[in-house]
Image 1 (cartoon, rainbow, N blue to C red):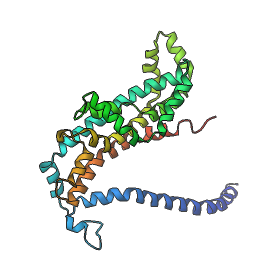
Image 2 (cartoon, rainbow, N blue to C red):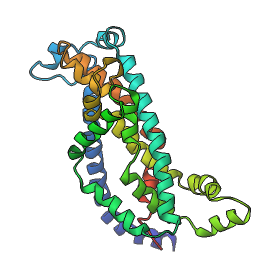
Image 3 (cartoon, rainbow, N blue to C red):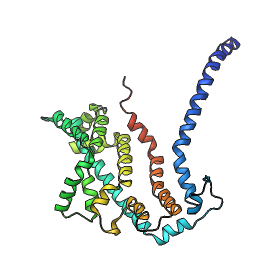
Image 4 (cartoon, one colour):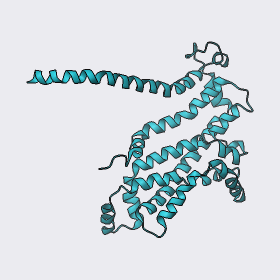
Length: 286
């Protein structure tokens, strides 16, 4: 009987193996394509400029040059740019997560007049191009006296419509029985939100945190608009400065780019499980 069962499986395995091999080859090719730019930047950061522009191009350096990293860390205010970027990205991420979570809780769990209409109007603002909002945002920031300050970088970014939508969709999947049980135990509305809703929404909160942190880390346009003080420059502005006031050196630029993207890779590696879980919530129902 065992031989018969195994014999019956062989034709199925013969049909499946070629398909699986093709799928894994395609996935491996996609991985190489996605990781290729990062590997090239990492390799270029150890090269001299003349090596980078040589023909034919060399993928790996013949001799590792550490002077690029030494120059960045000693001659350029890279640490200041890094600290500014960390400060702005972390504060914006924390503020956005808290504000969006409060708004999402109201839209998901509370009943009030005009809730659905207000939520629809809020979602409609996504259709407005961001470039159209630059001038009004700049005028308001200037009127508040927040130009050339951390407040001008942080406060205008403390809201995210997509974040409210994502958290609302997640919070709607949380059973109401948990809220009722918490209220029976004496929890207030804020207690339910903080002790029940927020811990159970950890995957969605992690997803939103990654998205907001990444967007703020790579944000160039808004800091370029509101900043003139070089002491407040963030990493994107600093990298742009390398091609402006300083002499262009592709090895130094590659090293700075790799150092700037390294924290994003680390954050994603630590939170990728929550990120994938938050993105797939609600995809399967039953």
